[in-house]
Amino acid sequence: MKTFGGPALILDRSDINTDEIIPAKYLTENSKEALKPYILEDLKLGSFDPKGEKLKNSRAIVTRANFGCGSSREHAVWVLEVNDINMVIAESFARIFRQNMFNCGMLALELPAQDIDTIINLGNDVEITVDTEQAKITATGDKAATFSFALNPFDRELILAGGWLEYADKKY
Amino acid sequence: MGKTIAQKIFKDHLRDTPSSDNVVLDLDVVMCHEITTPIAINDLVARGLDRVFDPVKIKAVIDHVTPSKDSKTATQAKILRDWAGRHKIKDFFDVGDNGVCHALFPEKGFIRPGYTVIMGDSHTCTHGAFGAFAAGVGTTDLEVGILKGVCSFRMPETLKITITGILPAGVYAKDVILYIIKQLTVNGATDKVMEFVGPLVAAMSMESRMTLCNMAIEAGGTCGICYPDRVTAEYLWPFIQHDYDSIDAAVVDFSKWHSDPDATYADEITIDVSNLAPQVTFGFKPDQVKDVMEMEGSPIDQIYMGSCTNGRIEDIREAARILKGKRIADTVRGILSPATPKIYSQAMDEGLIKIFMDAGFCVTNPTCGACLGMSTGVLAEGEVCASTTNRNFNGRMGKGGMVHLMSPLTAAAAAVAGYITDPRKYI
Ligand code: SF4
Figure 1 (cartoon, each protein chain N blue to C red):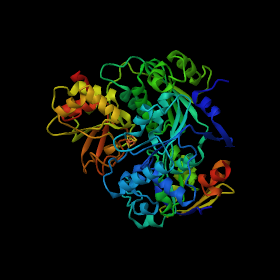
Figure 2: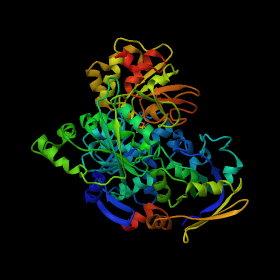
Figure 3: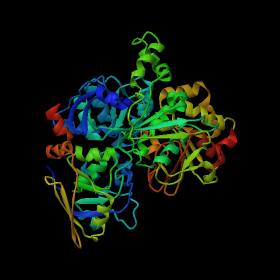
Figure 4: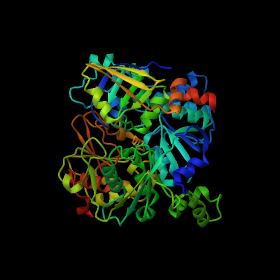
């Protein structure tokens, strides 16, 4: 199983699409590792700097609604993975992106809008810890806040197996 | 209790129920293209799992960048080509025979009512036009599909969209779906099947139904779906004539893939198109849509006609109605990319290609090309494109470029005027 949590990158906007996460022009790469420098390159969000230290040190993303909408490209998940970001917490996800996360043994967790507000209001430096057994997230910034999340049994099995291919190869 | 068409298809293909919310389905068709499949192939090879569950049910095409434009895209094409060769995938389409996947595969008769279809491409929802459950997936789902012929889904809910009224002159399926996305917003149909029903859908050609279903994903939908009927049976007849005694018999059989009258829906909406104006997007999200009159005069640099949304013969015919005998404005570049070789050749036979060329258009080979900003018409920083494609995300057709989505007719009008304008003036 992958490890989850760490310093969070707050992306305070809805509808961040896969072209923003990894532009199509990098889809000609045939390895996940090669995608690494291009993470969030085309993201339109205030003064966000895709080359900044903040992103480099982040191990989780906290964001708003409909994260990962657009293309089916799993590159959008891999580019997070190769940058050591194994989890995204959002109000909601686009279906394919969410499935791709769990298919790679990564966590895509949904929290209600007010919980996302709470995390964002914890300040600039938020640390996320996750307990997948208890289904609890703790976000620590200026203060600490704990939230429970729902993880369906199948998604949990995908995380434990390390992904859908590992799961399916054994079972089908 | 009655079932929706999606529930019927799920029941018919159920392999496993790993949790109360999730199902694993057997797949009828797994489609592959050279952008998302090579990584899947490389990964399967690295794991010692270089096998395919059924070479007949796998279809593959090189379409996104073709002929290859550089060493990297040539390598992607080669990985797919070599793989198709070693696994004896008969339905593999390369330079000369290739075209945009979601136009090519239906044209070959690969999609049938009641099928389950996946592809590593979000616009796989297009194939729901045939009454199939067709969903875009990522590379891992694609790998498992290739290897095991199965895919997992959450039990989908269905959003029923009844479309009524008669389309005014100059208004098309593209305008209808843009208007629907505007109503639903970009995530209004997330995790839902969008069932398109009603008199207008029944009267639509397969081409128009494909345009409708193609953009389901832009509202977040898992799949668009239309009931298979006589129009479907007539389109598929060359491929199914040995399976049925008559078209009538096929129509009767297809009706088993209609939702029951007492099926339950997550939501139902009705759209009346009687007064619909041509629609155009204005921002970087496909739900940012306005009537064309509100966009009158917006400057453009390039017109792009093609893609899995609107690169079909019907689209080329409509645009040619405006372009016939005219020249496009000196200030714009026009690019036509017929979606498949068959469409291209038919457009030639009908004299349409000449109309486009005489008007000043560049006609490319069938490819996705500029639709995703990879070749044949990438925009420069600050340039604006009037496009018949399906996505207007920031950077979609080139970094710093802007895309206005519209119907082929509206794009043709923009080409002639040199700016966005109401196409109804020209018809
Ligand atoms: S034409 Fe555009 S949207 Fe359609 S499959 Fe190709 S790249 Fe995707």
